[in-house]
Figure 1 (cartoon, rainbow, N blue to C red):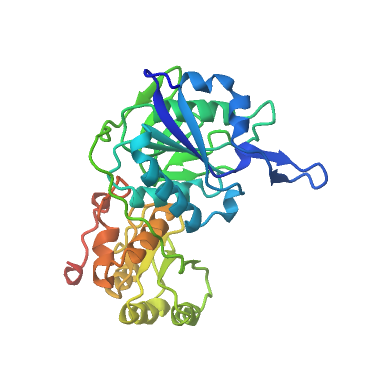
Figure 2 (cartoon, helix red, strand yellow; figure 1 turned 120 degrees about the horizontal axis):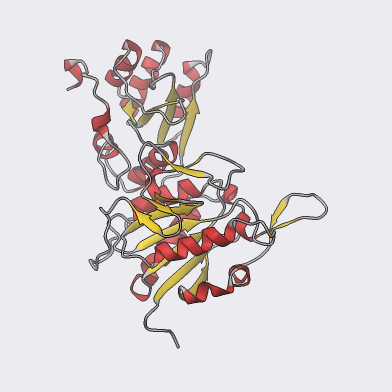
Length: 345
């Protein structure tokens, strides 16, 4: 029998460091424990909510793909009316990809979906998993609608999350935007634009996995990209120089991709930077050749958004406008104040 005053929270278990065990022979972390370890880690979590656990997978998040994302979305869809919030536990390596991806599939959701994990396994006394788990559950019980990451002292919008450290306990940051909220003695919500609601959940699940991401380096041959296009890929992310500039040698390849209706999204290699093409002629010519600039979206956001749009059968001619549409707080094109050539208007 459940306690009526407490919220009903469903934990979707995907594995990750928080549940890993150190292999005594190799010294490496292996997938081992299940979600039952969470209740041993902090037995008092049952005071926060009525908690059920459903198994999605148990693996190092390095091995997570769209298969797990789609399972998560389907489970939330199936159980949506039975729970007040959803907590996803997984490894940190691809956590920001998961939080971005499920944002698109669950656009407009009226309940909180919170992702968390740990840098130190729960079986180790110094684990950060205890605080992350408790704080994530606390956020799950709030009147919020949307996908969020709770890690360390931060509450981050799912489509703005980025892992910035392999060892710091505050391993994630909000990319190109202030944090959604902060965890201290209490929970501080800075952004009140996502209140919970009771509207029907509309799910659009599915992600195209046949896309690639290429980082330009001096000397890379443009023919290499043409070979990738001819191999049958459905989309590409191209990390250019500076604000996203692309060498002139690649312009024919961009034109070729446009003729083949293969969307190419251009972004910067600068950490924390935004793509503002048109400042230099190299960027301006790339835009004219069909490159879709990413503006201030993170790598995790732009790739999963492209994967999602392609799988949802959005026509090539509309991919650009959809990539630039602010669907969940992931992009702000107004930050690019460059006045582009009239031919681009």
